[in-house]
Amino acid sequence: MNARESEEAARTQLAAMTRQQKIASLLMLHVAGTDEEVVRAFAEEHRPGGLIFMPDNISPTLADIARLARAATLDEQFPVLIALDQEGGQVRRITADTFASAGTLRHRPPSDTFDAFAQRSGMLVAAGISVNFGIVADVTVNPDSFISSRVLGETSADAADRVRAAVRGEAGRVLRTLKHFPGHGRTEGDSHTSVPETDIDLETWSRTDAVPFAAGIAAGAELVMVGHLRYAAVDDAPATLSRTWHTILRERLGFDGVIITDDMLMLRDSGIAEYRNPAVNAVRALAAGATMLLYVLRGNAAVDGTDPTRLVAEIGAAIDDGRLTNNLIDAAALKLLKLRFQARPAAGLESTPH
Image (cartoon, rainbow, N blue to C red; front, top):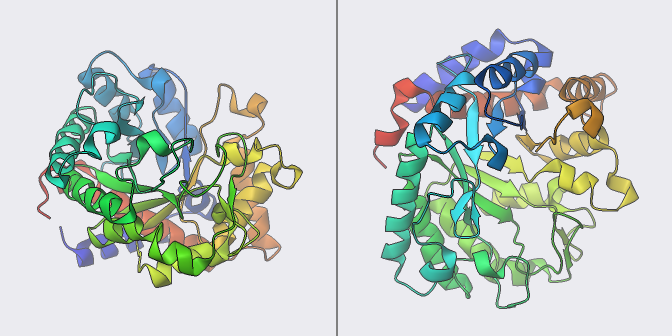
């Protein structure tokens, strides 16, 4: 596969899509359970660009997980991205993963990180997973930090060496994700229930927390996950809703891949009134520069308060009233189509040389 083939295929597909289909393709959703018919019906109804598998989707065998992933694939040329949080250690959806994780790897040579992530990603391939949200590029020296047990290094340089090794280890097997940009290690609190903050300035960030992300990007990571993190000296908005941070990621760090948000329902549930409306948050994230929006829907989406059909309609309304543009949606949809084309079975992702 070459870039020209991917570009041509993606542009042809984009031209055949309705606006509603383009918007839906920017969503990564979750549907509970291991029933293949339920998962396929959900994919057919909502046509998301991706699905994230959570513990309730995980069967005892890798083959069963792979069958569930295949059930969501409606188009072999542009398969739905199937994502998993598989860092190892305390964050592992597939519990059979006994490969070394951050708590051990940060004290070992980077070559051990390469080996662990190569082995882990091989397991994910067998489970039908195409995207691993597994490479923590955060760094912290604070043992009380929410993220401290999951970082790959206690200094920026050490973390960068191991992030680079992890990205290289997963190469050609799964699509690789760095998280949680611009860095969770500096912030106090847990972004699952709040919007953690820090007051460090951009210059300090550039010398420290930026370094592991830059290393992972240079090593070829295809995705960066942006966190609901507020760096008050840079922007009042959390990074997921910040045009400033998306511009820094694109222009200063040179990242040209897919920018995906952390779970947008975490922002809704942060306790901050400004972020209670999921549709407003979605529009703001896309306007800021996000390529894909992640929603870990819980149970009945309509009851949960975030119905994907309504969300697509409200993003469409934002195009109609000028808050978003068709060109912005097209650009994001095209970028995702190229990534999905790369993930198709015929591309042989697991054997692609890097």
